[in-house]
Length: 112
Length: 111
Image 1 (cartoon, rainbow over the protein chains, first blue to last red):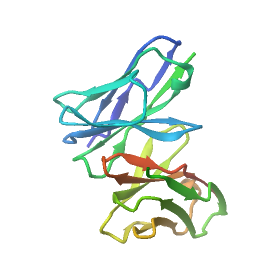
Image 2 (cartoon, rainbow over the protein chains, first blue to last red; image 1 turned 60 degrees about the vertical axis):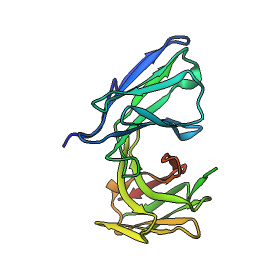
Image 3 (cartoon, rainbow over the protein chains, first blue to last red; image 1 turned 180 degrees about the horizontal axis):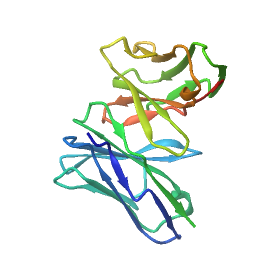
């Protein structure tokens, strides 16, 4: 069974640009969550989607948004990039909302 | 607001030693607790999941316990090996179904 996949694995952008990251969950999983990991703040929750609906949102500005498609694949978008957005963005999927979460390899975003 | 603390922040042990990693959380109203390992530059690998109604879970050389009332969990690693070297993260799932993570324990097992 394939694990969680994330594309692209690495991204380099400049301030002010926008970026879209993609996540494909494990087959059959309907819940997808996104997390940001930085050396200073650790792992922080961004948002969670279940059946195409955002169930939960973390404490991030409106520049961070996401969506989930009918096949459970998810995308997150960051607009007007800032230097502080440089981080490892991790996607996790679970069968249902309260089940064990499985993480993908992450997308390393560098903002110059 | 849920806060998760992991002690120690770093640990260096000789191969073969048994060791214990600690995790504490401030809000006992959790659905479950998950232990992960993270290798440098990689994603998280789920090690063990303990539901709020359970006291412990075991997988191979790993054993995790949960004391929800006191807000504590421990991860016990038996007969440590150099391949166990990684950062170990504890995370709790609370109302709202988000995971709140600790800062992690960086483990080094020396041959």
